[in-house]
Amino acid sequence: MSPITAPFPLSRPRRLRRTPWIRDLVAETRLSVGDLIWPIFVRDGEGIEEPVASMPGVVRHSVDRAVQAAEMAAALGIPCLAIFPYTDPAVKNPEATEAWNPENLVCRATRAIKSTVPDIGILLDVALDPYNSLGHDGLVRDGVVVNDETLVALERMTLVLAEAGADILGPSDMMDGRVGVMRRALESHDFGDVMIMSYAAKYASGFYGPFRDAVGATGALTGDKKTYQMDPANTDEALREVAADLSEGADMVMVKPGLPYLDVCARVKREFQVPTFAYQVSGEYAMIEAAAANGWIDGDRTAMEALLAFKRAGCDGILTYHAIRAAKILDGMGF
Ligand code: PBG
Image 1 (cartoon, rainbow, N blue to C red):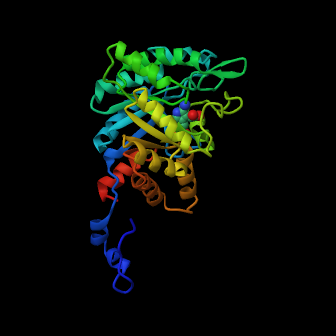
Image 2: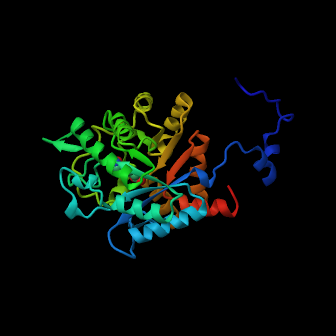
Image 3: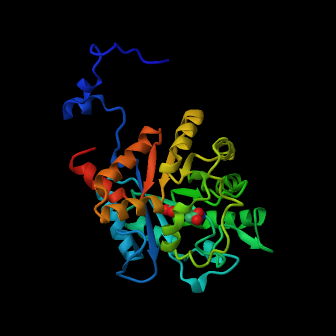
């Protein structure tokens, strides 16, 4: 249906843009603090906030500082944190066993945050790459990232993370069948309320570079992730992946990266009408920050514009490293 408009000058679209109040009144989309999930990085030690060089403004928090960060986020009204570990290379191995160590960094951070800030949601990634000395998301056998053996490791990891208190698990490795394995494991171990937000359409992307720096995986990875993450050329395939994950028991789905894949976000939301999230990834964050630091763009303005774009595309929420900045801006004046 094409909208009915009178010919100019009976119709003058600029009438609706003349003043802030009328623009506000006719705005079709809004961003609110309740739409934001803040990804944070944790590391060993105490009293540490170690800057991530490729992500200006982002730090790796020791667990005690992560608790403070969670308190700040909760005070700003941010509903959920995603916690990623910077794992000591000494505990990484090719079997990624640290992934299901109940004392690993994300488990400790989750327990510490839950005991101090119980009302903030915690989302934990279910993938082996921060723990795998080979840098891949799956177990590697004879140079191949194997699927079904990786699922066994993911099942163990799932139960350990649920036990630590994760509210949402985010399978992020694009292995086949992982959501079903996780959902059955959760159901049969009394974790039936733990949610799964699947990284359903996750692309093999150059935009993850700074993240791999942040979690210390940059040097470890040989080759690329193209045998499991999706080809940036495809959108029909994204719908099949979403359908599969929903049929296996995912509660929410995610598209990743974000801005370069807004078409995928919009299509997923339209086709499935399920809670749909976008991950505005590290490289997207770094681009805005780098350009802003050079004075080439306005950092606040472009960050808010990008976040609003996700809402316009139909996303229910966004994982963004700009969460704190956005929450402060929204608190002050709205956008
Ligand atoms: C791990 C994982 C990655 C990201 C989130 N979980 C990296 C990757 O797949 O290589 C990237 C997040 C970001 O770039 O901000 N499976």
